[in-house]
Image (cartoon, rainbow, N blue to C red; front, side, top):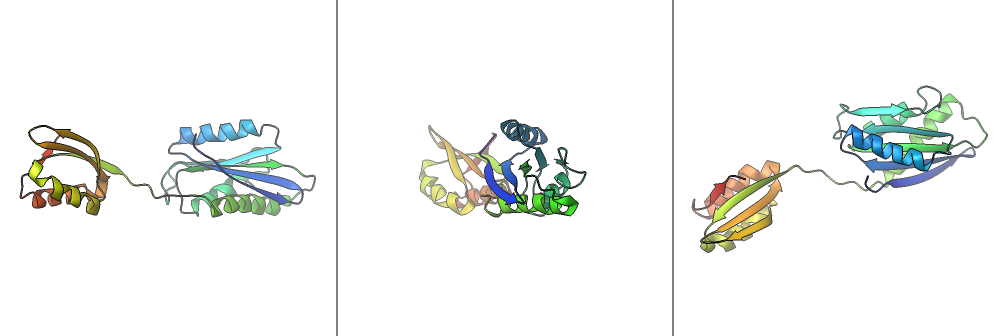
Length: 196
């Protein structure tokens, strides 16, 4: 499990501790949820929700009220996650009861607020699918090819030197075809794409 983002909120003497973490599958989400639940096993409730798919999708989602009245915790948390435009994350809101009942509406608002607060400062990054490309070039083309790569967001991940150079490249998947054409153009057709 990766790093968890944590916030805390006090509402009518009840303490709500929210943890959000990254998950790329339902199994990772459940592992992360279980890790937080075991850390806060003494809490009154450990309600959770997850979106284990890209933002905008609801193909792999889940939630639990963990003993709170039905529909007052897990579903509002999940709704907040789904509307955040962030995918592949799980959330656990741990509640320590403070002695004052919040009522159904109060619980819904408290769990939504807890998740929204944690999402406010959540560090996020765009996920890019990468592709690889292996290309054989002449030494005479090396400088031109090296200058070309940054324009296509391509990185050299390996080099082999013999009678010619073989570069192992990595770039965003949607730029692979474009880079292949650019390599052919800048080497006057001498670049040879090799099987991976």
